[in-house]
Length: 295
Image (cartoon, rainbow, N blue to C red; front, side, top):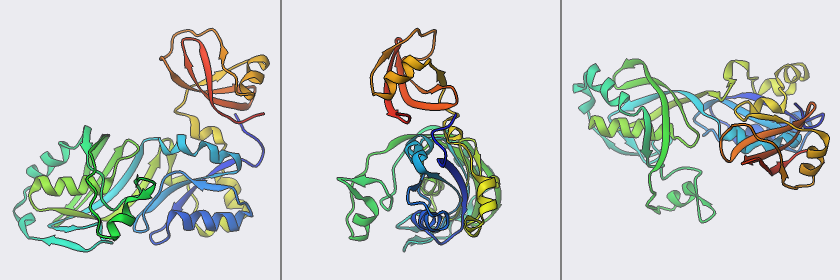
């Protein structure tokens, strides 16, 4: 399945320091392309997997951003910061972590698994009235934020050297790992903040297959790492259609087809031959194009 030649995805291993936008800027310069975007912000203190979209594959960004994600992280117990990570100002300190035993720690960690209500950090890219929360937080504004539902599929302690706890997590899109550390600290009664964060997976993408920032200037490395846009749609069921249906979808028209089973209002990746035609919803046999790729 392809969109057009020159449209592809590039998994990059972001180091600690640069912003996600810095990575995009370097990729644009290295590849000589202006149409490049990323699929989920990583804070400067974080490292790991950042999937870049090039060409018209940028239109798939929202679907890749919505994939489940995996991380490895380190929480420091006993110290809280305003940003919930090591980049912020310390707001409280204590040594109550010294009395925490392994069974209490494990019990608290396990309680975070499943569908939970999570309050987003004040310092985040989440927008309120069109403005990122971190800008308001820097001005000293405190905005009441409602908790949102997120799913923690897996949460495992990797090692413990108190006050540091290394853990891995697989979670739904929109989950803040900083908030997981915060909530674990609150439940233990000592507070906590995140000192390390590394994204290891986005859907089927793995950081082991990503290239470094330096390798973006290496044509052979980029060529080997590039993947077809369809790799960003593996979580969306494909639907093959004939030329007549494809033509109508290309023109943004709704089309009625025979539907056998499937979920109501299911999202599908519509193809004709090897070409991706559109992302559409299929409801009771009616295809409604949401995003058209081939005209």
